[in-house]
Image (cartoon, rainbow, N blue to C red; front, side):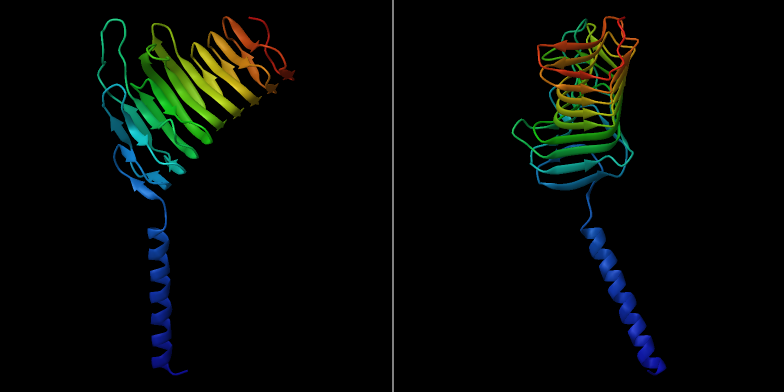
Length: 247
């Protein structure tokens, strides 16, 4: 092969490589730069921190499509909304990430939520919530209370801290399904759940882990909660290897 042909071949290879790289970028997750409604299925990711000051009943990220994955990519959604409604004593706030009641197959992962939200994440059936840090939510016990995470599906590996409600409410995680590997502290109720509840830790709350039976409740640690560490409601729960001394 002569030098001219070699140069042409190398240029062709570089051009093809560049085109493939461009195609890979175009086929990657859709970037989120602001609060918005997500109405098409697919993969999305945050590319910056978001701040939301919308009214009660709204959401920073409102999901209306099925089969949506949102990667917060280490960024934070912060609520700064002023109180809405009669005050005192009941300010009400929006939600950080909310999926419509008829949606399914929603995944939210890998980031932080804090500030003036009545709920951090509210998802429906077939959802996955993992790797979130939800902290210092301030809302009101109006229309269901204040929750860090609400979901039906898989809730795993999240940290939920200091969920405040007025007056005196606040639940770290309210979920049905597989609830595993979560850490919750500083709430009125740490985890209220039904399903498979494995390897969670709840501390410094009033009620630690409240489980509707029948459920599988295994290898959880609930200590330092003032009223009850683990509460099993009903019959048929498998209560195995939990650390939950009487307060």
